[in-house]
Length: 423
View 1 (spheres, one colour):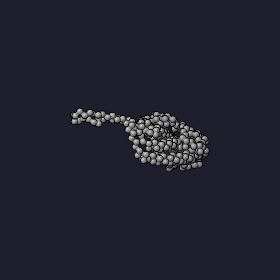
View 2 (cartoon, rainbow, N blue to C red):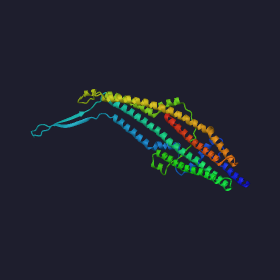
View 3 (cartoon, rainbow, N blue to C red):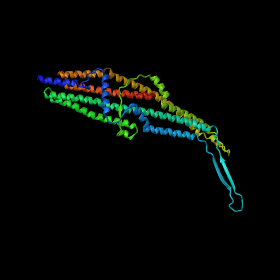
View 4 (cartoon, rainbow, N blue to C red):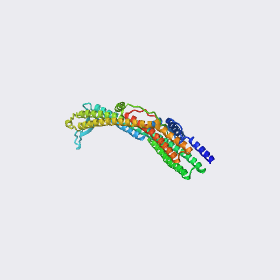
């Protein structure tokens, strides 16, 4: 049986020298992350579909996204209102024949010509234009907020696509290691060192991972379709479905929450929109006041009853009160979102450090120890499989932690109205 033992040890040595989570020998977790990113990049470059880096993807989304295009149309509509506000009252002319001789007695026929030239008092046109300009300014802020929202949505789709690929790569590695475990056990079973049940057990583990791989591949396709949908073109979800190029292994950031709140209240487009909306409401109160003044025409028709019709003024004042409340609510929501996003980002960073500061290294040490003992008969197959399964789960969780860190950063910067995210 000595030769059988030598064959088994040789096979197990080959297993231990393999790459991947089962036979990973490095002690620096960052090395594992780099290898995973490199593998993902290599697989990505083999894909014949068009590749998009993050900056190019974001630029294309901003240019062609359909929801953002609809928001641009809204701005154009409000701009048309500015043109309407600048119009002066139309002059009118009338021509008539007040007296016409129908009897044929020679009575003279008379003609009449009239001209009405309305004259607006109180600077109504100027007030209308100032209010309309403020409406346009608020609409532009709404558009900027739509850009902010789309930027976050598009970035989230990009992160999801990268994350789906990282998970798929991790599962491929685990599946490959299980293939090698099965190969070793097939050899050990052939020489009579293990029974059939142990061999079948290793095959069951491998087949279970094959099922996980199918789901992971489908998740990549789903993530890519969302990525393409954001770009707003039918071909981007068909023959030109993009392949994202980038990495989720981005640096950890440090922020001052108090400064983030100040920045958000000063820069967030939704806050600016409400501020401008409040200013527009105040200008419409002024417009309603001057609209109480009657307009003059050459016929000197003075509708004094207009002074009693204060409905427009009351409506303007109510709109101003509503706009002020909306501004307060938006500012409160902005600060709440910033503080919540700051807390969530801090938690994501701490979670990431758990993996980088020891968990990945410890999982590798346990797996290597189990493999070493298994080669010498000091560990069972179930113990090796359990260690391999734990290592695979930890590395999958690390990939998820990288994605969660990226998402938390996007959420925080979106809430604070800053942006320097890159993948």
